[in-house]
Image 1 (cartoon, helix red, strand yellow):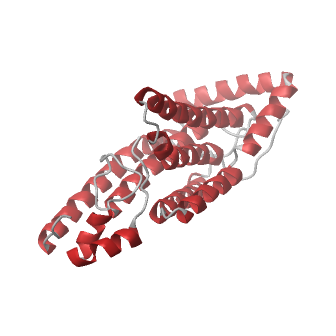
Image 2 (tube, rainbow, N blue to C red):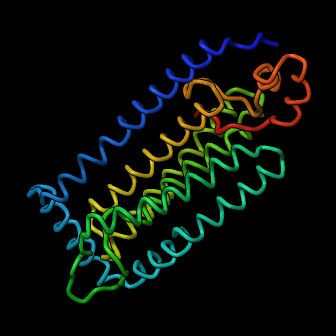
Image 3 (cartoon, rainbow, N blue to C red):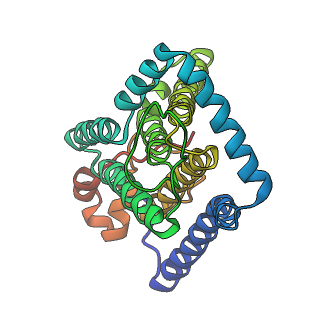
Length: 271
């Protein structure tokens, strides 16, 4: 059990962690900010690429009704609603197993994504593609894509929450294979969801790209903030449970065992 930190040392350490977290959040949101500026300014190369890809995929969709049906089904299965329900179920399981702060992190991350996506749509007010003979319709504005945002966000949250399962595998080769498979599956779900939205003609390519970038940035930012909340660097390898003795040390050496049992929790693992 470590000795409790002095107030001055604790404050300095917290200040450093907060500064690092704020800097990391700014860095990960820069790509989205750049893309948003290009969208607002109607940058010609981006606008031309958006139009070309939308027309090409729309022409293919019109001549392939089965592809349209498959894209609709995929969009419904991996839409924001079902993904939020899935994350909520995982959060309940984490809470039930005693991983309460991880459960809170998962719920807050998904809720923040939903609110941020809706607010940004209203701020940018970008119209959806206007195509002849459309194969699908969607309400509201288009940038960033809510489906792409929530797919990227949910995939990241679920992988980070389930990585401790892979870490239980003792064989190093199998453990690495399982971890890579989880990330690959998350990437496939995220990528196909975005492409389906473009193929259905309800989003521009830059809408989907913005959703992907924002989802990844938000997941990274909340993970860093969560690590700061626990008082550890975001890059520190994470085990399945917190070290109860460290929590106890913060409240006094005599209460260490009691606080360890009360506040033990699972953290989002580092990939």
